[in-house]
Image: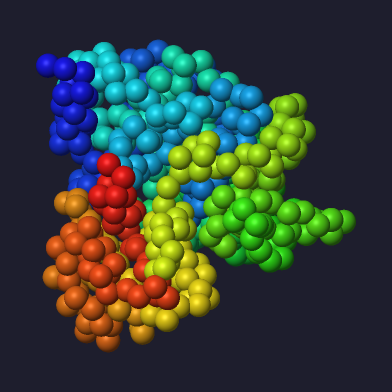
Amino acid sequence: MNKKSDYNTTVEFLFSSLPMYQRTGQAAYKANLDNTHALDKALGHPHRNFNTIHIAGTNGKGSVSHMLASIFQEAGYKTGLYTSPHLMDFRERIRVGGKMIREEQVVNFVNKIRDEIDVIKPSFFEMTVAMAFDHFAEEKVDIAIIETGMGGRLDSTNIITPLASLITSISIDHALFLGNTELLIAREKGGIIKNGVPVVIGKNDQEICRLFSEMAEERQANILFAERERSFSYLTFSQDQLACFHFRNFPNRHPEVIRTDLPGRYQHENISVVLTTIGLLQRSGWNIPQDSVNKGFSKVKKNTSLLGRWDILGANPRIIADTAHNKAGILAVMEQLLEIPSKKLHIIWGMVNDKQVEEIFDCLPGDATYYFTEPSIPRAMPVSVLTERALALGFSGKPYKSVPEAYRAALESAGPEDTIFVGGSTFVVGDLFVSLYK
């Protein structure tokens, strides 16, 4: 058996034998850290061998993670990055210096702990977290940026003691596991706040900020609110098509411009969290020059290969893909989408089966032409169900059995002055990218 087939067999084992929330949903969820601690012990506690930054939140944590990794790379630090889910390749989840873990390293890790897997019976996510921590320790990274999965308190990543904890915006998502109010979800996400570890909070309402303040006070953790450090003014674009985010600093109202290759307007909230965190780390002795900060922001995609955040895939017609998949995220994306001058708007849309169709479609434009589809995962909402419910709400469109088929239909229908948007689920965007790039 060659190395490629070894890797394919190993990944198939991970996907099919271990419970995986992104694919199967509730059955994969573990409401404790027992398996994580057991795996960590079996591996010799690798997470104790490197510095970390821990990031939770409903929206924005992936972008914040990649921005921070890019900045640390530009500052010369050997940087690990753990994120989820992946779009095209399992190895996207685990990177060092922007490079994915090698196929043979995935195979070797699984072989190394095969006996422990049989005894512990971890979930897919528990397994990948253990793999990431083991890889970062072996690679001797200076720092690792660790993104939580859907939670915080009971998230498998929450065995680390980071340099700083970050919590981005909170909104309703994964309510079955985290709670059906923003406050309950915030309490779960706030579970990453550690004793004596500073915490940076993104944009949230007063009640949620008050809750985080109380949790930080209980744990004697210094708390910083990114919104109180600076305010976003407006967005422009440079000649080289970098997005230019204009801020005003507090308290002296000093103007600040951040240029980045992530053009989604919603990124201003994430940039503010990153800047506040970098300032905190600079004050604590980390050597992160301003030039590295600027370069890091401008080369996030180049340094980390981040995909799915307002990706512009074509012009004439303009084609945009974004992984926003809950109400707050979709509202932010649609606000920017509807400002684009366009003769006609075509939307390729699919969802997973635990989302509220009526709530989500309340965020979408009623005058667009829809290409309903379903991502290629067991947790997908069947396109027949999605189409029936969308048409009942007054939307117009046709069903397509796969994302590539829906994409081809939209391309055939769209004129040069039209816009095509692809979204509704991370896995819809992932299916599109697989069809385009693999």
